[in-house]
Picture 1: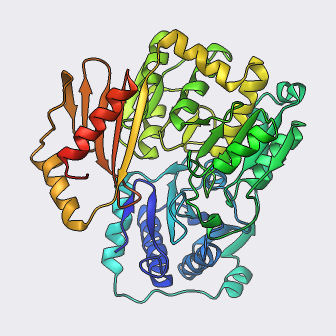
Picture 2 (picture 1 turned 135 degrees about the vertical axis):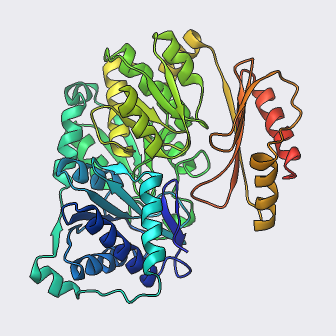
Length: 470
């Protein structure tokens, strides 16, 4: 029942996310670590979701019983902090109790490997194999207080290390001089302390909304989108802020409201940051995106004589490709990105700080910078649609898309079709459309990008009808 998707293991609380399954996963990790002969240390953290802290402690008790030392970050913290600690302290593994941007009824576990990377598919399949081997066997635990006394559990709070790393990486002087007014929406998640500390240190005027601890996330999905950030949008306009910044539940993804009150799609954020790093900071190198992310990055890369690399969905693919090709930035249309020289995974806190630096250094508003990019590279439009389905419908669609490999009749000349992750059709006019199953939620997603907005909507509707989703 424990299966890893593109963003770790996620399950409904009380259904599959249970104490027994958490302990089972921890025992599987113990067997894996011992079989590999790695140093028997692991760092663990948790976010603000229901049962997250308890789940971390249950897992730690299993590690203790197996003689593995667990460093527990003893306050709810951003996922990037766990990745950073794993990397900096050269640990073989880290774990985060979170379901990221999933609805409040979910919780889950992300596993990180050496270098603070998201566990690759080979690693997660290995964990699943160990789980199947020990299913039904008793799982021993050491009582929490006893494990602390014995030295197998050590509570830590390394937030300052992580924040200092970000502060050293951005131009704090430029931000101080800019005297910016910034609105922050942690979406009831874990980024409040981190973002507030960085921006107040840079003498910004910081305004907070939705900062309290709420395991129901205010009744909304803890994922920054045009729908969920309407309050931030109004706040930015009413308070005349230079930018509005939001992060998802565990702070590895970012959402942005620009100076005009417009929601910036994560695609736009990636494009802005890549453009800024090359044009204003003088960096040189390629960019990496997943196959559902804007090809505007390809246009910007080409304008600078660079290349854009495409990988399957899942940040582990982005970070691995970045290392392979020495890319300076990589990201995905769901709001996750990372920059060369920082951690090997998504970090909404660092991305937010870099966007603030961009406004300060350029002396331009986000709306002005993006207009410059469109004037240089041309505009492009994306349509995104999500669909829920029954298990029977999923089987039917999978057969059509991935086994029979059928594609709809579309009134644009096709250049090629890829089945790297779902079914992606590339058109000769530079547009594309992809239909794929989400790796984190029971959804089919259709993304389409075309030179004209009406064409993106038209192609999406054709695909929708082809799959019987209307």
